[in-house]
Structures are given as C-alpha cells and as structure tokens.
Length: 189
Image (cartoon, rainbow, N blue to C red):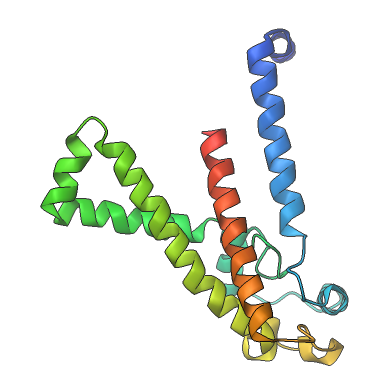
C-alpha cells in the first residue's frame, strides 16, 4: 500500500495532478473563510464564539443542509456563500428540459450538442446565482430574520452600510465565487 502511494509520486503527470487538486481544495477552504466586502467579520467571529459555548441543538434541519452544500460559506458570509447549489439546480433543470423539449433532446444526441447543453447549464447557473446572491445580500442586511443566524444582532450590525452599491457588489462577488467553484469543479474532473 505504501509502495503504491510512493510510486504515484514517481510519475510526474500523476504527481502534478494530485498537487493541483490539493491546491484547489485549499483555495476552496480558504475562500469559505473570506468574508464578503462590507460585512463586519468581527460580528461573525463574536457570534461564532458565542455559538461554540452553547449546547448543540438536535437535528440541524435546513441550516445544516445549507451548511453542507455551501461548505460553511453561507454561515460565514463568505465569497463562496452559495457553494455549488446554483450549478446543481441548473444541471437538474437542464436535464429535465432535455427530456421534455424535443430540440434539446436532439441537441443532446448530436456531436457538439453536449457542449452546447453544458454552456446553457453554465448560463442558467449564473442566472440562478444572481437571484440567490441578491436574496443572500438582502438577508445579510437583516440577519436576525434568518433562523440559523438568530442572536447575531447582539454583537453589532453585520452590514454597517447596506447601500444599493453594497448589494450590487455583494451579488457580483457571490456570483464570481460560484463561477470560480464551477471552474474548479471542471478542473478537478
């Protein structure tokens, strides 16, 4: 077993691929902890420290599911807040449309059609990320209304200046984070 692992490091192409994949995973983990511009990271840190001292709640519900799919980025108000959820949603939508829409069904069977469908999936991903990013930005301006962020208002304003410009910047940042995750996923596979 150990000799097989050692042999993988002797093959330059395989070693480079493993190191590249590990580097991308490190980028993802770091990106989860990069707070969105205009969000007060000290409020999040104080809230997270407070939560660590609280007894664990049973179940977890929807907040646990959101944390899994966003890699903790949503709870951290990070640039990867949406994770890959928009891409998963877009993929499901395109697969369903391919089964229902005859033109897409024909396109899926053609030589270059699969690439075109992948391109459509990416466009739909961006559209979904824009809509979801807007709602995340609006939610961050009033975090006490979010069930899994209750109690955060005790530590200060999460977004000290929730202007229209901040909302646009936040949406652009979240969409860019989703597109980066989509690109990283393509590179790894």
